[in-house]
Image 1 (cartoon, rainbow, N blue to C red):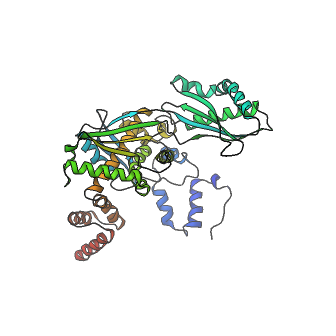
Image 2 (cartoon, rainbow, N blue to C red):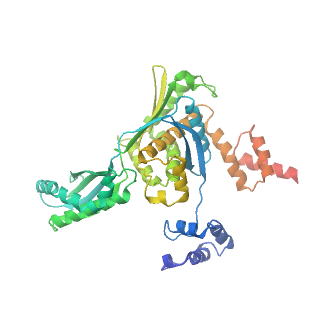
Length: 433
């Protein structure tokens, strides 16, 4: 039975692995081998990775792929994508190629405000509190000056400080609601540091017996940090390699989007497809995909019901498909200057600033959603997905290079399922004996 341990974080990495293998892997030498084979041979680079987080024992690889042919605002880009799911990069690439021949993607940033809050309880008079907060705003800004001066030089900083009365929802609960512009930085550390200074000003200037600061923290809900992306073309141009005419395709596509707008069960899966594209770019560029996911899904629920992030229409013979989505991203700070592959990914994107990265990322989500819906209303989602999944199944069963070639040839004309692949592989091996 495994035992608890004291001082684990102080152990050298090899001793951490020894403890893990002994207590949770039945002493398996294979477990130790797997962990160590993913170490980087460059000791300096490995140390860099070790220090990204705590208690590191190895590296966990995800594929870095490329989706070319993205025509965004008249400029061709190749998008780096980090994701483990089969068919996502292929689907994004196919959508990019499709729309590059129909005018490409158009994208623009609507707004860039980010939010932070100081949450506190106050038992005194509300009117007096309002007056005091107004008087304290200059002191708050002054207290944060050492933090904000560099950001202000880049055109960002603190935009507003407002008192919000939430006592109807929770007894004695108030908050400072603060808006920020963090320019090319995602800004989490900047925002949190400013908020903590504001909290200190409150604690210094309000009666201690009436005030309790609960916490000071940014919000990952950023409904005013918005980006818009769209594609459009005449309906007749939507034909092509499907069995549907352009008009049939457009009508079926719009109906599929409308279903996601009114049916939450469908909307969740629909939006997951959007996030396949967005998260892959967010990960590749060293941004916080959990923060992005949380904010996006809150935005999808902002009107009281979870709904589609994308929308489509046919108007005057023109098909239009678009997305409006909150994306708080950065191109400086964090891993962007530390992780070698993140730096390379940003180089591939031609060193975008935060606004440009917002547009690129929104386009990735729109493209991915278009590809998924296109498959759903024509051939079905599984045909392309399982074709990509075939190689995963073959690798799982240690297929040789020659076996893979024969299996790919066979399943070009047969339906792919996990069981059918195993069955055919067994037949192939039996015949080769």
